Length: 135
Image (cartoon, rainbow, N blue to C red):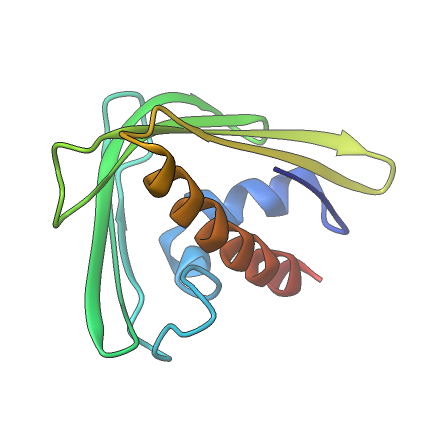
């Protein structure tokens, strides 16, 4: 997925890297206001954990940072608390483009097509919220 964002690469990176910023946009459209919590240890080998409530259910995801290049790239594992054995990989590339940023988002290594399709729907909502947050 790609998004052209009207914010500098530093602001886009901070939206992913700073837990106080991430909690302001992260989650699906149905996320319960104020329910998003984030714990981020932003370094190679550092862990993150993000939780939120949506549609009356509690959701928690976490993983380990594999690459951290400030204002350019983040790569991290991704596994829901309910299915820790289903680890996948998220790669975010952040590139200056004109007065804004080109965000290239890739989520790979899914256990099956259903998981891929469900995440694609979810990330479409999440990235829409990120775009609004940065506008």
